Image 1: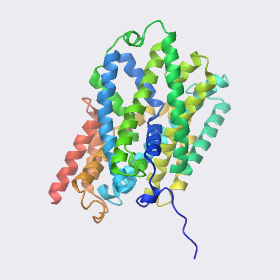
Image 2: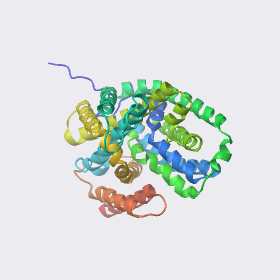
Image 3: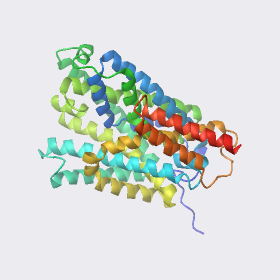
Amino acid sequence: MAKKAFDVDYANTPVDQAGRKSALSMFMVMLGFTFFSASMWVGQQLAAGLNFSGFVWALILGGLILAAYTGSLGYIGAKTGLTLDMLAQRSFGTKGSYLPSAMISFTQIGWFGVGLAMFAIPVAKELLGLEVTPDSMPWQGYLLVAIAGILMTASAYFGIKSLTIISYIAVPAVAILGTVAMILAVRRGDLGLVEQFAVGSKDLGIIAGAGLVVGSFVSGGTATPNFTRFAKSGKVGLITTVIAFFLGNSLMFLFGAVSSIYAGGNDIFEVMLNLNLFYTAVLVLGLNIWTTNDNALYTAGLGLSNITGCSKKSMVIVSGIIGTLAAVWLYWNFCGWLNVLNCTLPPVGIIIIISYFFGKKDFMTQPLKKVNWWAVAGVVAGAVVANLLHWGFPAINGMVVASLLYLTGKLIEK
């Protein structure tokens, strides 16, 4: 009888103790997850609207909210050893889990494609001297997208092991080189950091700034259990997630903010170009995007595997192909839609959190429903409110509505 191949990614089973990883490995993976170039765009918005004091307070307030949300999910993932999709089966039902799986897969494939273009387009402009516009891009640019897509899909295909290796390479490189470039940029400026932050019209409130911080990674953060399930304990999952989100996000926001106020660019890539550090810039940009893109593709593969019943590896390939083919179009047309979709995922996360902590004793042993309609209704209503109510924090608005509906359903069932 043929021996069944061992699944190192535990795509459909809880991670056992043999599959658990060191705290350092978990920290590197989670930090690499938060090293997301699009967060630099948010840093640019924060710098344009806030002085330095407001910027710091927005980071702290938004970071606390984001850390509480992702930390809770990180703890649950580590404690149960389950993926987001397997957790969703216990909260939404076996068939009901298709909704959160589809939502998370769709957004992560979208961000994967955007990430590819975020690397290929600036490199095509600077390295090859190509003219790239929303209406046209020469074939060399598409070739860069294809090469990056193949490489990133290949590493995501091999799962948590390759994600860990890439994180060990990318995290120190991005953190050190990015910080050095940022310091050099500040030293070349006429004003100090605090004074430079004060320049311009500051029309963004701290609450609004904190909202941008939360919105920057709350959708990706929903997938936290996919990675922390490999942590040695719930405590390790919680601590590594909270520190990584605080440290990683803050660095990305700072890189983006300093880039915009000293170099007028979108990110640290443009700062490095202005400092004549072209190859270092390409390396930092590539590694920065690679870590987040691999985690996004890994998450999409798990989500589609839950829906289709196909293997995680085959679904990673499918997701990579879709994201690569659509990358340039996604970059120019879809960022706004992806930000709308960001508001739809926090209701998923909060329902899983409530489901776990309110039913802790029998969470892993309870019989699974086909569909928990209260959970489904909570996500739909939460997503609508988060997108349409222009007050406070959209993600929190959505979570509050989803929580109320879900808890109401539990009370009625009792």
